[in-house]
Image (cartoon, rainbow, N blue to C red; front, side):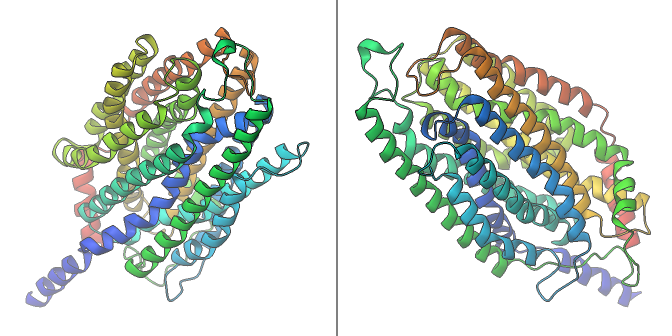
Length: 483
């Protein structure tokens, strides 16, 4: 009996993660968010106003790139399930190996080639390449959560660390990109007496555009350097453990059978569908926010600071939501946190002044934090629920995380492509200092009505999510017994 208690005590100690390990794990995910923030807020307007490809081509770059990134998620998940265990783990080699190539592809995504006719192909190719490589990093990184500890509380704590650092990474990305290139979207080069028809085509505008191309590349180089540094920190500070829930002699179920099992698991489908709509709403707001501030509400001189305010609010509120979900449950936290953004985005559309914009920014940050933290905190619970329902199978963690990324990326790609096409149909004028009224109206719909509709749909689906706190506790006890 004493030996058994000693074993349980030692096992409990083994499950504990040091603060250093949690921080190193969290730092590993920061560059993805830094780059993701830069592309989410600035890639659309960069393609339209700096690279100066037409709105249809920009929509195709955004949609095809996101869709391709979505398609690569299950493919990468498949290869990860076939990967052999190495001295540094099964997931770590993927992250370390793809990082240098990812840095190169990201840099060239923000480079304007000297030719004009082939720019569409250039950006489409490098965006697809970048999406492929970031998938090779992010799928194993997100699945690594399950191999840090077998204790749910420790995993939730590590996820909270990760989300805090990732929101800070998003903040850094917006700060680097926004503060360096903010002048790209100001009106200083537009003649004030001719704002409605002014373009960037004069000689002064050409010189400004040339210098702005350079600052975009500087920002890309800084973010690329962060990728390298943070990956090294994660590699040195995180230890990947093998799956403790199945005997070592078990053979992994073939990928296609594991895929079918995962897609039949009800709680996973419900969670994925709910956050699919919610992530689309957040993506619509992110991708159109700079355009909205520049052309719809006369806040072009302030948008970078408003973006930073949103992200600072999100970073500060992550610990609050971690406390809230522990006290009141994850499902309740999702409803309370994500609902919060809806009235404030509508308020910004109808009351577009600077004071309201900053109030909306602080309030919206709360919802952004909840939308980032909750799905990644709830996914491990779904995986635990699956493990209990399928006790003879193992090695499906990458399938869960890759398919979740697939659905959310694909939906985001469609929403980005459609929103950019809507701007073209509304008459978006590339390089103009002002946009016609239909474009302004379209931007208001993309910031207000469309996200509210998506969030409402997602929360209605989330009502059906079956893993309550009682179920989660029962699963935890059952897994401890199984282990």
